[in-house]
Image 1 (cartoon, rainbow, N blue to C red):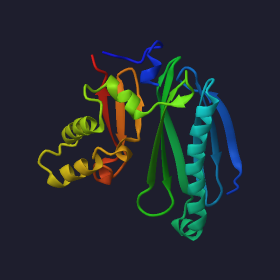
Image 2 (cartoon, helix red, strand yellow; image 1 turned 90 degrees about the vertical axis):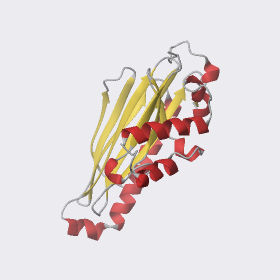
Image 3 (spheres, rainbow, N blue to C red; image 1 turned 120 degrees about the vertical axis):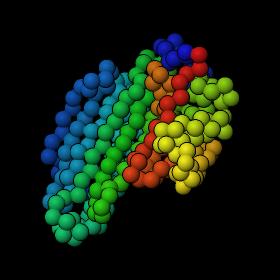
Image 4 (cartoon, rainbow, N blue to C red; image 1 turned 180 degrees about the vertical axis):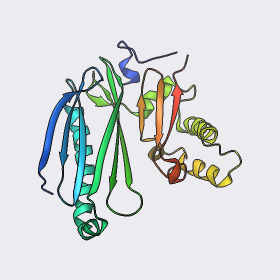
Length: 228
């Protein structure tokens, strides 16, 4: 099975608020630390956890900008719905999480998720991903990764595999409505496949909540192993 080793070929890769606390700490992932802050007031409470990859300032800025962008949008919504928060009886909430699925001398792959509640019965989820070539200081594209996992490295082949895996995972074989959601959410167009990470097991494609299934099913992921 092909894996992302240190020696992998480069051509294939690669609102104002008061901070109640701000702590920099090492994570359980080697070469990664995080900065955690918990800003809030009587209207909202947030828990921000921003990862920092050792020696990768450009990538770290991209990650920080994305998380802080989500947070700024949350603050705007919270302030806009201030009266609702007071009637709700408790502050609106925001929190984010991250996962580093791979971190070698050549490449690092990061998945960001966030959840915010600014009124209503259900909150809003966000996702973003970054796969970074450390040797070229640039983002790795999906097109660069597909040859590692597909004999026919194109979106049509990727779409077919994702549809098969999601149909099985969601037990959609006899559910025509769910099959239709899967079909639409996996159309072979770039915007359906802009969330992905790599690991030592292969390429993982992520589908946001509501993209391929009802909201009760949450977000979905399909792992495609490296070619042998």
